[in-house]
Image (cartoon, rainbow, N blue to C red; front, side, top):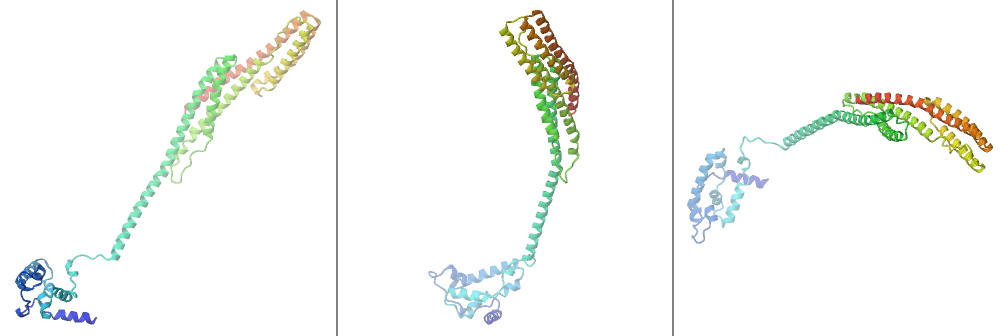
Length: 386
């Protein structure tokens, strides 16, 4: 602190721009020993040029420096070298000039006085405000995007599910016509008709089960912020699809039962050839074949589905089987006794019983035909609404 005080005192006592007597100037250096640095510092014969440059710089500073009084008080090279009674070399002169100006705060004077200062605290506050603003902007954007997503999800889910209902209903509708046409054209009577009807009925069953499974699925979930109107509107199409598929399955099952009865009767009573007369060895063989055919027919009839439409036919079939067993015994007895007339009569009674049972099947088959075609039209009207 003492050194700084003495240095400040020395600087304060130095007169501004004082003229140094010629006796204190360094002798002019020969031209061969001169240098630009020596000329700039005022050694030798370039002292006059140094003064001129100093004068020019002072004039230029007067035009641009806002505080001339401050700059005029700075120590000059001449005043510093005068106090040293002449420096020994350039290094001493530079060091003396540095020491004389070390206490002057020139950095603050190089900046305009009206420049606003921004402190570290202010900069931190500014950055904090910018970060908060950016965070709020990002948060608002995310909230907006989330809200739009939540509100769009139910709409998109409802549209996707409605498209599934439409496709499923169309697939079911496409299978209704072939089944109805096959049933209407006596597909339950002939072997070729039964084969075609079975194939169409299989397609109907697959489509109806898919529709029923889709209709049984719960409606798409509804987010808290989502609009549920579109999803709630799916209840109607879902109920229509469920009703149409359930009715289609019921119709298919009923037609399947009819096919089972028709196929059973085509295989039942597969009797051997029944002659009016036969040798004893052949009679035993005919008796075995008749017994086997009647037993197989009894098993086939017992496996028929318990359908109310065919209740009367099943009772008739049970009576016919019992009658055929009795008629079979009479026929074998006639053959063994060689009574051809009686054997022919018993054979006619046996064929009549079997034909009567087949005719009995036409009644429930006609009911199924009328009912199935009507119900298939109803299902078509339901699924067309989708």
